View 1 (cartoon, each protein chain N blue to C red):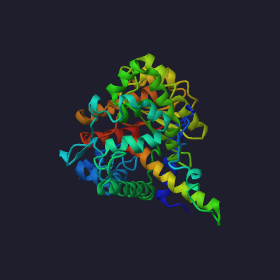
View 2: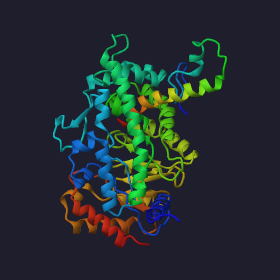
View 3: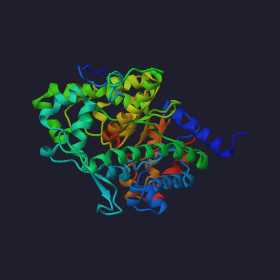
View 4: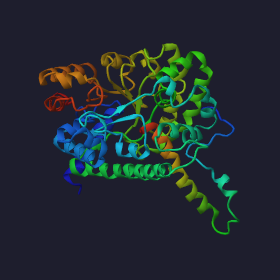
Length: 56
Length: 398
């Protein structure tokens, strides 16, 4: 749906996990847990700006 | 054993859902989209219900308890101006700030020269819609957010903190509101989630209506590509707020994409091809969409008829509801059709006569939900809303 653009952030994403991962030191624990929490909170920022546009 | 109120809720939900699936329930469901009317009825000013959402919620619950309605929106005075003021949004006239405390909030569209998205910024939007909104759009629509490259400020930093926490607080409060509607009056929360068409978003919040209609002639390819770039995001937002139980529809608010705001040719080229796939995707995920067709969209009924049976509920505002029923009534449930001017300036008898005419004309086989044409504000007479409700209960039995 819609055309894909080179730098487009995917729906639901402000800062992709892969971008954040590059900034972190070696992960010694559970990477999936860190990724999930990062993405869940990142989605709130996405909701913020799109709800500003749509609802307010 | 379920409580009396829970049994009433289940009964109303079944009635509402059956009608939305274009079926014949036990009686015609009543689902008025009551906005500032609730303030008038509950004894609040427009300022109070717009600026203090707890008062708005309380007013909705009072109406739901006092009137025999099947479904309502938890707060149809949806734009909580406490939040918009925290962010510093410039495009609202707020009751009690510059306009009368008894006037509903107003949207102020900037002049074409002051549009929130400039003529040469289509490529930025197309390339990265989310980045564009944060980096370009938000600083322009907020009095507090600093533009990229400009010094940050205390107000800038606070805007995000206050805005984010306020939005979360507000959205979380809807969960409690819906539960109280269910337990206090057995009332169903009428919709869940929000959708707007890509074309309408460009007109409403980015280029402005005048800017966009000029762009349709001067740079049509950019407009189409921008609409396409918005599609996946608007779909995502709609689905993320949809009812997990898949009972109630996503609210879709239709603004200026219809004839005569645009030509049929422009509708066919821009509006519909970038909306239809969104509706189909939402339907593929098991959710209906409520087309809240503000104004008159009857010129486009044949396009809407292309959608799968039952995928939408079609709300009629100023258009001819009998024509709408003729063209799409076999496929979709209709709602609305009781003119707001009648609810404001007519008599109770005139309201009853109008309800009878609409029910006789479109509700014979089910698939109809009683409502006013547009959202009901504080100019509606209480006795007329009672007449609409009571007549439908008496006459709308199947």
